[in-house]
Image 1 (cartoon, rainbow, N blue to C red):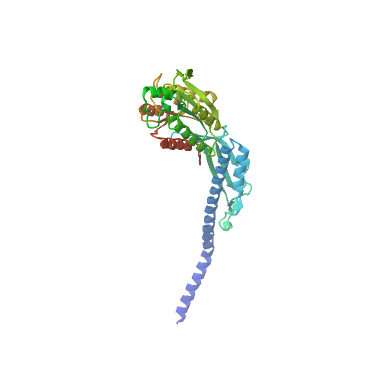
Image 2 (cartoon, rainbow, N blue to C red):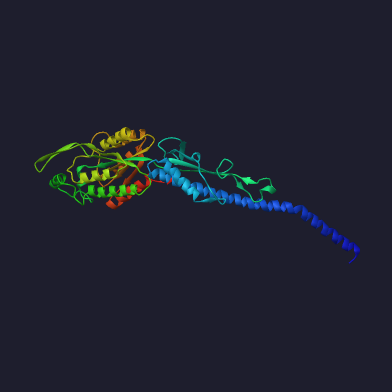
Length: 381
């Protein structure tokens, strides 16, 4: 090889060494930044998981304990201390666990107001920054590109529905008819009115469906207050020589978290003589007045109205449902027989801002009550 070739090769090798020496620090910086970027993203995912788990635990505890904020804070802190972010546990101060109220908007999203009572929403602010107990997170190679630490903050919210429910149930004489229909002569109807509800009648099927409803509510973390109103029409009959008077409408069980009060009411009506017409409006009106007088402020209010017949006294129920809606009360309706006036009850639900459901049999009725109970009690993030 000639001297000139050796010189040119030596020059190229020297240039490559110089170029490598120049680029090496840049390559280290790029590599370090790539490693740290992945670390930052992983830490963000970790803190998101911690925040979401902690806020759900807090909301669940708040619902189960009827609003115990201290217990909810303890639940959030416990969950945060059981998980790691960037190799360390997260500590939550009081100002990082914020309580308030959530209100559902028309579009299905929620509006939050921190500090309002009674609380049905929680916000957890998980953080690793200079203001947190653990401080910011150190990078691996940040000194090479002037970022020795980084901050991450994650806000998570969760809330549960606060609901007060009034069951408005039809106790007109036809509720003692068989599930498949009356199939009774006038004399047999008179006898049925003066008898207690028989095992195969609509009322006993309703009793079993209400029990399904109550058990579904009890299976959820939220503790709703439930009341019960029954309606027929003011009536008097002579049964076995005794004069029996029936009131048009009664508040049989006032709002309470003790759902056994509703069960006791159903048991009492199973062993009581009642009959009469179908004044649905009176039941809705009684429920509306009870919610307005005994209901809690800032809590969602719902009426579930069931009938097997046709409203036949006074103003129409869909007009009363409009008054309920104006008072912020949602009205759901259920028809339980093919003889029920489904058109009017659909309109009643529409005016009350709720839904209408038809049950041709007991199995369907139980499904409807299960669905309604499940729609009230949930925690959302």
